[in-house]
Length: 124
Image (cartoon, rainbow, N blue to C red):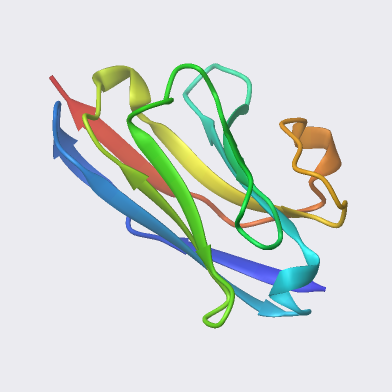
């Protein structure tokens, strides 16, 4: 099984940037489609971005398109989320997740491995 550990969250002012990292260990990282999800208080966990096993294909939620960039370094078994032009509505706990499929997916139920989450707070 793969284990996932997120880092890089914090408090930032609106308009600022953060880069989240997700370090994977255990099973071969390249076996997995990877994704970022987020959950704000009182809300359902929602899709943010996903990336294919090679890194050549990415999909974003409309709410973050043009501001966030998902990437992966397979040599380092690490997933990233570069977040720019942050807004207060981006405030949430951010989770990385892994899925064993062959195609990227936005469906959280297709991801079976999750990290513990990292808090991102954007002040206005």
